[in-house]
Image 1 (cartoon, rainbow, N blue to C red):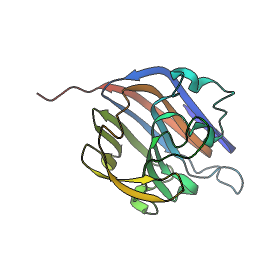
Image 2 (cartoon, one colour; image 1 turned 180 degrees about the vertical axis):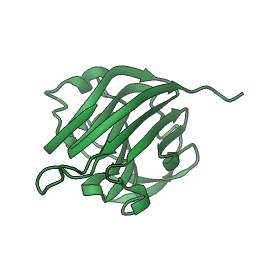
Image 3 (cartoon, one colour; image 1 turned 90 degrees about the horizontal axis):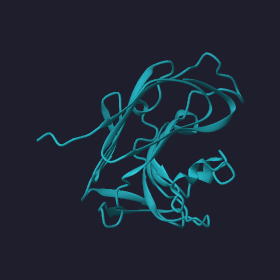
Image 4 (spheres, rainbow, N blue to C red; image 1 turned 135 degrees about the vertical axis):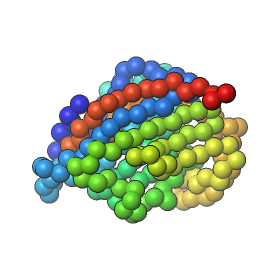
Length: 207
């Protein structure tokens, strides 16, 4: 899938619902051939997964509610990973929702310690392999075989607070239950991406 989005953004949803312990994998290349001010930038290999509306699960497809503007997705449930945000300067992981259904900011998992580290940013015109894992309490965001972010029961995590600050907490299933199902979407803004080899793998215990 070739997606050319100069000077605008989009979320592209796979309309199959995925459930249970899975690994979602794909390859993506951020192309630099049309880079120009105000147009295409090498940035935003972003994804939502196990995403749903908190009140009507498939409501995320309602274009009047989820308009394509990034902040319209803040109330949904699910996971979000971003490599090369803000013109290829940030790499982050979040657990949504970020706001209540009324649009008020709420406390949520927000990991950003990879920001500004060149080894964790997009390499223009390189094909990156992305793996997104949900297995019970374990959530992983893996790029090119390296774990960019991982959370599991008992880990110390960073929370973005409702007042815009940060604090640390222990990640537990009681506080932050794992999402067991939902939809997958590519999110990109002002860029040109080429996606391939999209796969969803069912995960089973090794024993």
